[in-house]
Structure formats: structure tokens, C-alpha cells
Image (cartoon, rainbow over all chains, first blue to last red; front, top):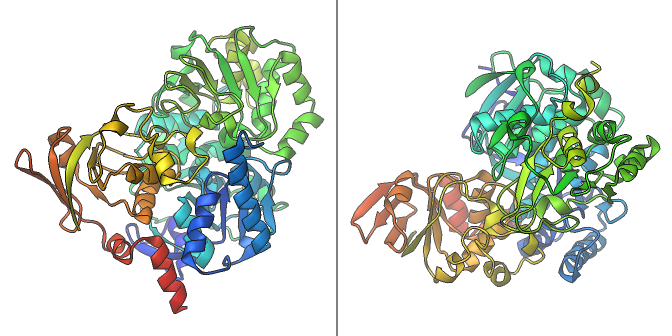
Length: 429
Length: 165
């Protein structure tokens, strides 16, 4: 009886020939990280564990990304706790303001995760890295402290559901729309405790940036991890970046799945998650016309260069609606620099957008774009729960970058084809 | 382990953003976090919770972020344990790690009303509604989680393991 890619990776890290869903394993980890919100608690619990040193300084990162640049004295104090711990332990992989980006995008970009790895982060969107063929999952601060102390963590082996995409996506349909469409179908707990394995011919049409958007949002279906088997595009992306040797792992042909679902990607439209659940998914056409106060392009889900290029395609030579604000936040300094070199930042500024240094800020209603009472935002982020981006009566629609950009121009929820035409959104490959 | 207390009932898919909004995640202090627990879900709930009370929830309780501040805020407000139809996985781990016991019990959510006196038996996996004389069957805590609970949480568990190696 064969194994899925998730089971194979976990078996290899548990020192077992095979593992089965439901089994509790003592699993070795390849890399761990925490952010400025989760690190202070991680550090406190780590110190209570009394082990003294982290298991391997080269396999631990701290990234300040949520409340940076620090928004107030308490958030500055939290960052200080992390800084002092990093210095005291001589940890080499610390990303402070100026060098920091949104952790999931940054740590992949910096090559800290590769195919076949077990990657644990004190941040729920750690599942992001599954696009590289790694087992990556988010945990809380105490679990992260345990992994940081021992280089191991107990895990329950998840059952896997296979999602097979067929067909070539239509213009303006992105990886984000694919994953939102799945969540809309199976619900926000449709993959609870499980592994989501994404596969099918459609993936060949998707950039790595789009693939990351898909695995990034596995948590929004309740999943433990989302994963894709590496292909040539994956290897071309990771090979020049990887800091450690990696191992390509694929599912066995006779692997056992809890379910196999097929999604006709060619039949999908651009969609949004309407307030106030990621599972409340409707085609953009059905929600079009809703008046919008703010549009936000950024986050670990959609703040990558491909998202910024798409937005710039729509915004070039156009102006943000006078009753609407547009925030653009490149996910990392490298993406910011690339956007600058490609002339995208100029396009955003000319259009009347605010462009910020990398931060998670608006996505969590933390700072840099908090919503007022009753305001509406179209956001490329991953969550639209009540109060997520500000006041509890504010409302958030989750979308891809093209929809957010088109909406910023018209001031109401808009299909990109209604601003620039369908041909512009067609895929090159 | 058996706990008994007054029940507060919440709905399905209660997420960590309404349990403790991110704007308050600039501290790890339980009392400070507890002051804002459930603020965006029901601003009166915090005031109604007393020490030793029990929370009864629907499906997928604790969905969303990995913030351990969520179970810390709930425990800090005085909640002694939670029975829900189901829990989101990161919340599930976090709650046990910080010493807030959880029980998956599908029947409790439909049967228990706000203010009922209820008893959770984590070992047996049952919830007893003292007020209404009803009993609801659930899943006993998995053996491994019971070992974690018996050890006193993840911190003593790691201390014990580190001491052996």
C-alpha cells in the first residue's frame, strides 16, 4: 500500500518506513521560525523548558513582520524581547526592520525551506511552503518552543485529500481564485486536521507565486498542510535559492487518499470571499457594484512580484477613485526592489496608491490601514472574519490582485475585464 | 479529570480574531488578554463569565490564526474547559499546551443552554447537563493528549524529555 507525499515526508522524519493517518509520531524538524507576535511567548515558554540552547542555531529564524515598523510602545517592547533573545543565543537568522519581509514569503525566498523538508512555524500561514513540496504547518508558541528546544515535535499524521485541477484557467483567474473556489465548496473546516494535496495539469500554467497562494490558504479550509509535488518549475525556483540539500518526494501511484476531488479550472471565474468568512465565495460578477472604501494588495497570500505586476497592468495610466484608498505592500524588500526596478512602484504612485515597507499590518487590523466603522475593503489577504481588518462592523472581500486593482479604479467591486478588457488578463503560457 | 460549572454557549466557526482581536496581541499577559476576550463576538460575554465556568461551542471552534493568546485569554477569563462539536487543529494543540482542556462532544452544543450547570468528564469523554438531567457522548481525549495533560502541559513534557537525553 503506497504513501502520499505528506506521509512519505513525515515517515522519513520520524525514522519510520511508513506512517498512516491517525498515527501520532515524534517527528524531526528541519527548520522553525516565529514572528514578532508569537516569538515573545515562544521565548518565555522556551526559557521555562530549561534546556538552555536551541537545537540548532542554523535552523531557527525570527522574523519581525506583523507590527513593524513598531506601531506603539508595547509592540516595540515585544520586538525588543526577540532582539535580546537572538543576541543572547547568537542566532544567525534574524530579520529586523529594513531586512525583514513577511516571513512566509521571505523564508522561502531566502532558501530556508526546500522539497522534502518538515518546516514548522509559529504562524498559521506556514502551510505556504507546501508549494515547494515540503511538509509545512503552523503551530502555537509553546509547540514552537518545544520544536526549538528538541528539534522534534509530536504530530498526528493527517489523512490526505487529493485535489486535481484540470484545464487552463481563463483570463484573470489566478491561483487565488482556484483555492478560494475549493474553500467555497468544502467550507472553512472542509479539510480540518487533514492534508490537501494539489495536483493536475493546471499547475503547469501557474507561476510559483500563484502556487504559493494556493498552499498558503490551506489553513482557511482547516487543513494541517497543503502540498504540491515538485515539478521542473519548482526546481528551477528553489535550486538557486536552497541553503541545504533537498529531496524531491512524490506520492506513490497506489497512495491511499481519503478522497479525490476534481476541479475544472477552465470553468472558474474570478471570485471573492464575501464578508465574513473565507468560505463565503461568490463570482466577482455576482458581488460587483458594492461600494469600496479601501483596496489592499499585499500579504503572505498575494504580496508577491506577480501580484504587483498584475496590479500594475491594470493601474498603468489610470487613477485610483477619489473615494477609495489603495494600499500596496510588497511582501519583502527584494520584491519591493524588483517592483522598483521594473517601474511598478512609479505606476502605483502615479495612480495615487500608498506604497509601504513590508508588513502584515493591515491584514490583521494591526496598523497601516485599519478600517473604520462600516467601511468596506477589497483585500488580497486570506481572512475576512468579523473585525479582522478593523472595526467589527467593517466588511472585507478577499480577492486576487487584479480584482483589487480594478476595484480601486472604479471605487466599487469590479471584474478586471470591465476596466482593461479580457485579452490583457490572458495567460502567456 | 472532571470539571463542573456554569455554561456559556457560542456558535459555529468562532475564529481566533473574535476570541482575541490582533490589536491586543502586543502582550502575552493573561489578565490583559482576558479583558478583551470575545469582544468582537459579544461584548457582554466577558462580563458574564465567572471563574470555573464552561464554554460550549459549535463546529470548528478556534479557526484561524495560530495565536496562543486565544486559549490564554479564554483561560485567563476564568473558563475551566471547552466542549465543542469540533475544534480547529492549531487551537486544539495550543489549548492543551497552556492547560485549557477541550472535549469534542457533538451533542452538547444542541442540548446545553446558557446558564445550565454542566459537568465535563474528559476521561470518559462525556458532558452531563446537571440542570436538564441530560448526558451527551463525545470523544475521550486521545491517549497521547492525556499524557500531555498528566505531565502538566508541553513545558514539563519537554523538561522531562530533555532531562532523559
